[in-house]
Image (cartoon, rainbow, N blue to C red):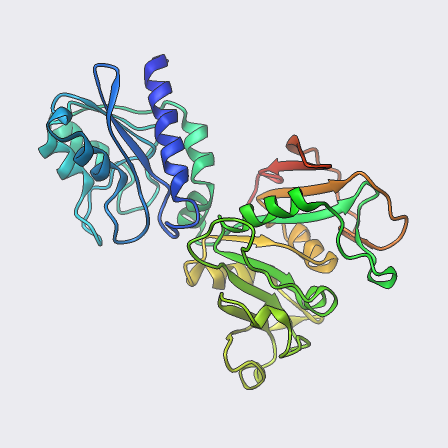
Length: 354
């Protein structure tokens, strides 16, 4: 592997992450133009209708783009959408070589960008840092290939696996730094999801307040029988509220909310049906934030792509468990880091079949 290619692709990945929380349902894309080992232009996609990363980088490079190498975190597009094809702009700029790690799985692209560039005499190098490129756009890849959102399960718990004990007035488990990290993670996703029980007990706001965000995520409540109070704090702040219910009269109770009506089975709504509907609404990522019953439903359905588990160095001895269902033992691909006085365990691709 060419170490310089790897280095500049990582620069493109870093640029791409500047668009987190802004580009959905499009991918995160960063690009840099390199001439004689020096970056002469860089850019990232800032959201629908804005210039693509490649265009920003080429514009900044100006005449220096001629004969230079363009490093981009994903295959350039070759079709007309809200903006012209990046491939045509790359060709007209005089770029001599394009390095991109992986094809864009979108059927409108899916190799067409690479094919166009090669047919116009632009050298194309691909296959470098493919896994890193997939991880960068995990939301997008899941959504494009399966038409349902990427699912993150976020929970805060004690060392003995308790997520709270309202009966003893224990609601907050982790410290301030962990709380800020949760808001940072919220800023990246399209939607936050909880069960009606969490709304009744915790009365959460489900907003991004402790991190920079260009928009508030959707707030989804799984509430088959419309138990959520119309005075709940979840309705007070910005961000559209979506009620997933089986009650056809829900619109009358929640006139300012979006209502998704599903069939129920044994008092439960099928998680797969909710995810399918979310995908139809172009929601590419959901963070599930509680409670125990909702966590259990998502895990039983095999629909968790990533865990964010915050552990407080404390014990409760009693209270709500994270999950209340016997599961087959599965070892996770996990990383661990300290967040203030707490510990964050991050596990990706939990089941590998999502």
